[in-house]
Amino acid sequence: MMMPIYNEERTLEIILTHVLDRPEVGEVIAVDDGSTDGSWEILTRLSAKDPKLHTFRHQTNQGKGTALRDAAAQLRMPFALVQDADLEYDPRDYPALLEPLQQGRADVVFGVRGFAGQTAFSFWFVLGNMVVTLATNLLFNCYISDMETGYKVLRSDLWRRLNLSGKRFDIEPDITARALRLGYRIHEVPIRYYARGREEGKKLTWLDGIRALGTLMRLRLVSQRRLFGMQVDTDYHNRRHVELARHHPLVATDKTELGTH
Image (cartoon, helix red, strand yellow):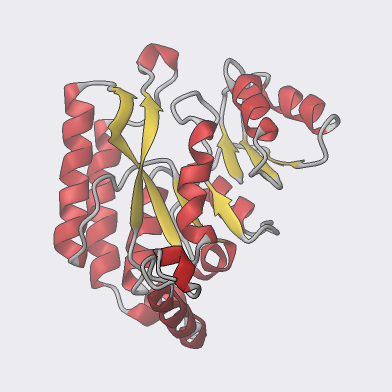
């Protein structure tokens, strides 16, 4: 699990306690992105108590995207999920998010806000998310419901092969566009969501929505080689697509699973 952190002392210990208590969590890669409050001190204290918590620190704020890219380079578990350090996303949703990956049915899973219990931040925030999601579907000929969701779960091997370049909140369209350009279909599951407001530390603004649209357009038009470099591992991705096609949930290896005897 990867956690980017910037000035989240109010909620950091609460969310980390919930995360570290989850049986699905094998490691937490926490990156303090130049916090100026007490976030780093909280991380230092908690990491001394729990060996699953691995902490890293940027001396200056470099953005959520940079923090996630640094965290992805440290992954050791087979799957990795992004967990923000606020209280908007609920770790109780981990089993549902991980199930498609553990069953071999998907390599990319997004948690969708809105189909389960949810509180919204504002009408304009929701509308902006709908716009960037629609743009994603049009540009990449896909059908997803929540491009900007913070709950994105991928195979760790795929995280390392995305060649991400997003530095700040453009990391969300960066992850999405690169996975789609590689031919992966995004599996969605409903999640809980508890939106916070500006007074509680909400950092995303309408300008980030404009930047997301620009990022999506650029990543749709740029060449595959520019996106993934000269040494793109096409053999790996081809193997994964074949494996994913073989793991349809109705294709059981044991006939008793389908109720036939």
